Length: 271
Ligand SMILES: NC(=O)C1=CN([C@@H]2O[C@H](COP(=O)(O)OP(=O)(O)OC[C@H]3O[C@@H](n4cnc5c(N)ncnc54)[C@H](O)[C@@H]3O)[C@@H](O)[C@H]2O)C=CC1
Ligand SMILES: O=C(O)[C@@H]1CCC=N1
Image (cartoon, rainbow, N blue to C red; front, side):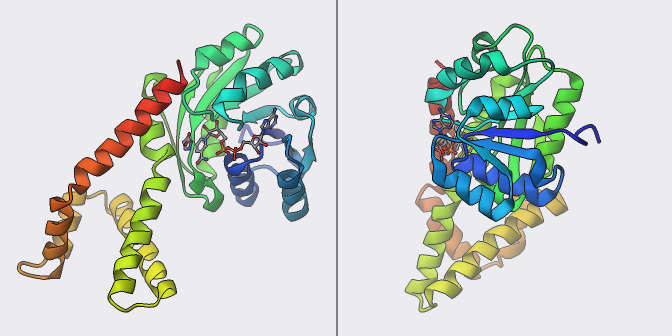
């Protein structure tokens, strides 16, 4: 694989940077000794160094200098200032990967020297457990090998597809933000179980495993979700009563509106 021997750096080790480092080191596509990470916040660096043995520093430029592939995992609002501070260290064929919501490839390329290889990715927090859903869009100077490397990195922590950049806001609203739409579903289903007498821990385990099982069935059987729903729904049975309540509460419109609102916020961040 073309990633062999390559060093991967992370600028920003907050929630997403740390999730990716944990996922990637767990997948073993690069050894922890080949992972470099920087942040202004020392505690997250210390945690990564002590738990995984990755190389850590508070100097972003050191990460750029030591790495072949650099993942930018800082907030969209500060990406520009971080880019201008590392610009001169991005030499040769170093590959920059941005996971910042909304920020366009062109905006990143314009901050860096002409010809810099940039790829934009929208992963999600489930990278921590190697179940992320990621989408990848290639910048104008990035090569086919770069795109392949990026897909391999993100496939090591879940599934990854290529999309044209104009669909990145849609991806951000759906799978980037999506885990946060599902956690309240799990919590609320467990609340229903608690209401009916289950203890909290059992209710949460049953709810989470139910979501996991439904998602796995969908992916592994490649069957339309409506058909899978019908398999659970006996005529005059228990499930259809629950479905009726969800439909009456407007569940479908609620989820569609959540994805659309998050996508719109991603578009705003890109302006
Ligand atoms: N949290 C999520 O589920 C997802 C986040 N993203 C994107 O990932 C990026 C990071 O988001 P989070 O991890 O959620 O945010 P976060 O706030 O948890 O992490 C950002 C990290 O950047 C560090 N930082 C701030 N200024 C810095 C600087 N000058 N140099 C180096 N590090 C600096 C902060 O100390 C913090 O640890 C954002 O651009 C976001 O849009 C993308 C997909 C999912
Ligand atoms: O909420 C956010 O802005 C980030 C981007 C996708 C998920 N979290």
